[in-house]
Length: 327
Length: 279
Image 1 (cartoon, rainbow over the protein chains, first blue to last red):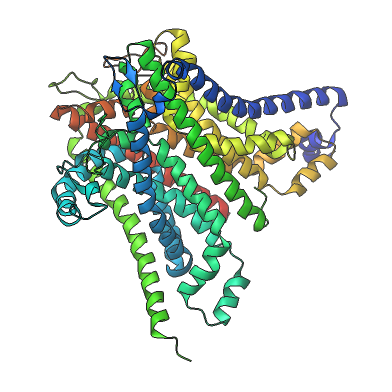
Image 2 (image 1 turned 60 degrees about the vertical axis):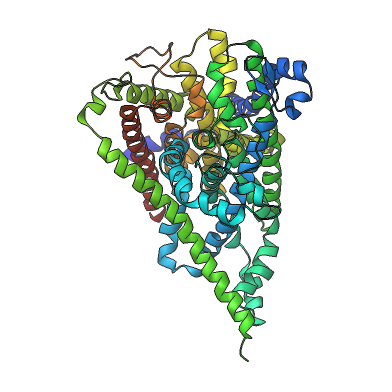
């Protein structure tokens, strides 16, 4: 026998069936158990939040969601202000991020010179890699003072008197508030939406686009009448994915939202969000009811993001099936 | 036939908007990095890596925080990465086409985007409350839970890219399934799996929210994993939110090092992965 046969021996020789089968079963069990662990974790998070928050839900009932008081001394907890702040900042984030992300996806699939697409795409994706605490510090020390000095006075002066949206832009320009938080969130979710959008844009069958070109469409008409309608469900899925991220983002928002428990119409005023309230107050929560209320907030946040992300995933699955992809 | 002016203008406007949007995105990245580098470079001192976090008004460094972060990231990797690779293997290999695998794959993506602060609360309820005190160990578990879905996803994708012919070749030699997986499939997908683990490491290095109620913080040197452990993100958070200038400076220095580490690891891994693909 030549020497190579020896090293091939273990490949060619048939392993003893019995012991091989046993190891196979163990291997299967270990991998299956790890997969089940993922399921268990998600279930465990939901259950432990529900148990931890039970005291608050039992004590306050629906008033936990509709109540506006967050009174630590009087032991009264209503989460309307953080819920409102979470929704408003996420809405601002999406208003900024959705058009920008679609623009970026369009730029990267259609406009940019081919050599520059890779580097630009990586740069945009780096926005997602920057730790959220860095966004927070930058927001607190750089963006907030900039907003207070330049943007917010202008908004108050020019939009503050308008009929319906006026009240949104009134108040002292302090920089810390829902508008600043929404802008930071918007920047943070851009990479998540744009990378999905770019992915599906480039997966549109060339025949569709070429047909549109043959009919004399301009590039804008290809986007608005062929690409976007064709990828609509995936784009909506991407938006929900961004929404899920924005709702749950903690550190960046905690820095620039101001931890205020008063409800105010103005976007320039400090507010609170579910995640920021938990981050700010949990280690200070000294009563069982206080802690339970914060965990109940975590439960609400978890359920809402779970629903939003499930919708996102379902919409994205649909386009993948449409494009004949499996995962 | 010339295109009517209105359609041409719409076309130009749309493309100007797309270019502007890209500049808009890059602008924020540049601004954030510029700020971090300028402020951070000014705050760098040799004592940053040799001294402990100081009380207000004193000078000091972040040595204990760097140490705590390194330990928790490594421990998080040790716990999370093997579990993630195993679960990813089940999804792509052993449990392929099974209903459980489909559900886990779906749920994994949700866990991937789930709010990290809720993970922190979860570990607080499960570990910190049972133990009765904050600990670096709890922090590492929280980081492992953040890491797990990242590794599961990248492992599953990496294994799915391995062509079925390789599996069939293995089976036709009479190899048991586990040998095909461990000797052939893992080998083929190794660099992609490692890429996922390293990207996951970069991600958990910057995570703050899950550490707030698990590892908490510790102003002094401590190597005890069973007690509150200092770590870079939480120190940055506490120092940046404080009213003291010395603490702000240290927070910027920490932010600088953290950003270099996270972005550097990201770029390095992407570069290596790309080179591997070309091969």
